[in-house]
Image (cartoon, rainbow, N blue to C red):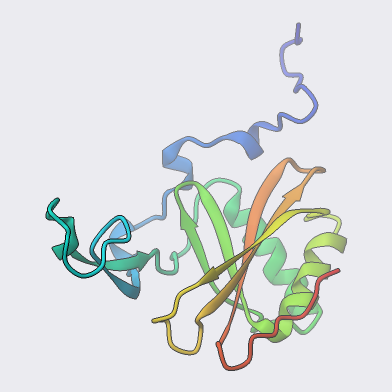
Length: 180
């Protein structure tokens, strides 16, 4: 049983506070979604033979746009700390945009600065993202010049927080620096 005012290890209230009012952007109308493609049909249907009616569907593939500050919750403190540390290391332009969507934060990082940002996130004492739980690859063939995306899922065991780094590259030059 906890005493009043004590926090159980691994349950930092600031880190686990997922209340919607603390993670929504200040003005949701400012978010401009990015259309990265168009989907036609559903369930892999192509050509004739579709009697369900889903084959005629046409809808855009939409990704959330960049989020304006303030982000809400612990995201603002994190962003301030990262910006200060990045400026000290000469990585002022490394972050292309920040997306806060559904209570999660994603940093879009320039390909050439990926290693520097990953090292900064790992080594900076106030950040300490020491665990990469996985890397996902996504292909958006209609997103010209940014067709390939690599998404790094990072965890700070020290602060009990999760973030994502996303890096893009074109089909013509499918190379991303290793963070290992």
